Structures are given as structure tokens and as C-alpha cells.
Length: 448
Image (cartoon, rainbow, N blue to C red; front, side):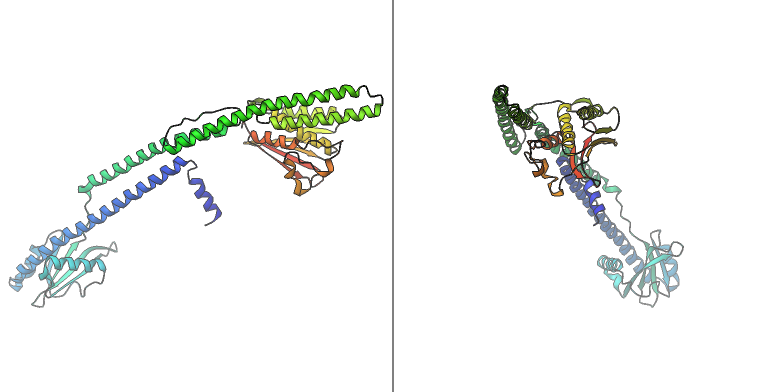
């Protein structure tokens, strides 16, 4: 099976649990329904064959006895007189069927005729198919009954056709049963999957600052799952509350000694020493700020709102230019999107900040497709070793070359950026440019 065929099969298979269960039930019901129709048809065919064979056997045996008792000159006329639309009789000197056909259906019909009228086997009964020369199809059954005086009673009969009109009630009954079972299966699956759908909605919203209690109803297993999930939500909410309070305390407690140290540094007589202390304090404050932003990520609940992404990027590029760094923006002038503007702006600022820190210039480009927006932040710099492209997204990870006072940070900028972009349903990747430098590519879905 080719990959294309597999993908088509996977595409046609329902994605929801309820849809798959209903499809399985419907397929089973339809298989049983079609099976019952086939069995019914076979029974009707067998019944039609039996009725037709009974009629032919009775009339043929009666006609053979009556014709044999007549004068030879009157036998052919008598055979014609005993004929009907369904059974034609001829008294002839030559057989219509030279030898018995080996076809299984005719062998079965011969056995059935002999069971119904044993006298037809004396001395010989042969069967074959008659062919319509114009249509080239088998249209009737031919037979030859050898008589004792050397003549033959040849006959032809139409093939038996099953009559189903008398059994429409059975077909309607099975169809109604299949339809009833299908409707019941759909309702049952909806009843069973409704709690799961509510649970999936709650799982998607949990951790974003909202507690979504799940109704504890349905089967015992669903109720147990819902109770466990509600308990988990309460524990997570308590953990988030405790974490928020701890962060507030840490933020205050860390900034207070830094402020005191900065004030004391102002009384240092040596200007060079004072500058060194201020630099260390600035670095410490920046690391604390980055760490707090990382730890608070997901706690501060920011609702998406309509934001001009193009204006946001142009402002960030202008800020870099005002700081004396060569930066350019290429893209639309306006690009309204539904975003969590603060977190997305922080993420893009981190990417542009990395480019200005490690490169000699930065170029920001924006391109659009029907479904997504692609943002590329390109710089001209040393790039990143290929084996490190994924590791730099890990929290507190820094490359050895950047661990210095002038360029080093807490190693959280890319981690914060990745979290923010993924929260919008987008992706962020890093790649080295062939002409030198690094490109950070952000893909955001439209109105995610």
C-alpha cells in the first residue's frame, strides 16, 4: 500500500471518538443488513427453483404417461396440445439434448426432478441449456425424455426467477431495524462522548488562569475521571496561587538589597570601582527581571486582543535603530491580528535583541499566506553551531561564547520567546544563513 493510499485512508477516518464508534456500529449494522438480504435472496431463489421444478416434474410426468398411451400418429399433436407458455412439449424422433450437461445447476435440477417424479428417470432424462441466437444468452432449459418405443419427448422450460414481491415485509422489517439501531448508536455515542468533550475543553483551558469544573456525571468511569480532574484543577490552582505570592515576595526581596547596594555605591570615592559596582548591579537586576518573567509566564492571564503586528515590529526595529544599531524592516505597514500583544512583543523583542547583541546588523521581514504569517529576524554574525540550535531554547542555557559581561544574559530570552509563540499556536525555529549569521523564523496562524 502506497503512502498516498494510507494518507487517504487516514483522512477518511473520523478524528473524533464518537464518530469512529458510530462508524463502526453503522458498518456492523449495514453488514448484517446486507447479509440478511443476501440470505433472503438465496432462500427466495431456492424456493423458486423448487416450485418451478415441482411444476415441471408434475406436468412432464403426466404428459409422458398420457402421450405414451396414445396412438403413435397422434402423439406429436397431443404433445403440442399439452404445451403451455412455460413448458413446450414435442414428440420427435431425434433428441433435443444428445447427452446430459455437466453443469452443476442442471445436475442439481435433474436430481430434484427425479426426486419429485422418479418415473422421469426411466429410461433416461437429459438436460441442457437453450441459447438465443440473437442475444447469445442462455434463455431456457432444454430437456429430452427417452421413451420406450425409440422416440423422444423433448421439452423446453424458462429458467426459474425468484419472486421477492411477496417478502417485502421482511426486507422492510430488517431495514427498519438497521435504521433504529443506527439512530440508537448515534444517540448513545453522543451521550457517552459529551462528558469527554467537556473534559477536553477543560484540559485545553487549564493552566491559563481559568478553573473549569467538569460535570461529574455519566458512567462510573467518566465520573471517576471527572472527579480526579477537578481535584487536579484545584491543586494546580492552589500551586499557581502560592507561586504568584512567592514571586511577588522574591521580586520585592531581591530588588530591595540591590537598591541599597546602588545607593551605597554612590558613596564610593573611586569612580572606576563605582562604575564596576553599578555594572554588576545592572547585570544582576537584568538577570532577576528575566528570571521573574520566565517564572511568571503562564500566571499572568493576558487575553488576546486585536493588535497591529506590523506596527509592533516596526516600533521594535525603530528602537534598535535609535540605539545606534543598523536595523531594517521589510513588510506590510499594517497587519491586524488577534494576539496576546504583551507576551508576543516581549518574544519578538528578545529575538531582535539577540540579533543586535551577537550580529552586526538585523533585518526583519514579514510575509503572508492565506493561513499564516511568517516573521524572519536575520542577523549578520557568527551564527550558532548546528548541534546547539535546539539546546539554546532550554531555560538558562547559554553558549560558551556568550558567557561574558558584555553579551551574556540569564539564558532565558529564547525560552520566553518560544513559550509565547507556542501559546499563540505558532512555531519558532533557528537556522544558520549560508551567507553568515542566524535567522529566527516565527510562523503564526492567522487569528489563532
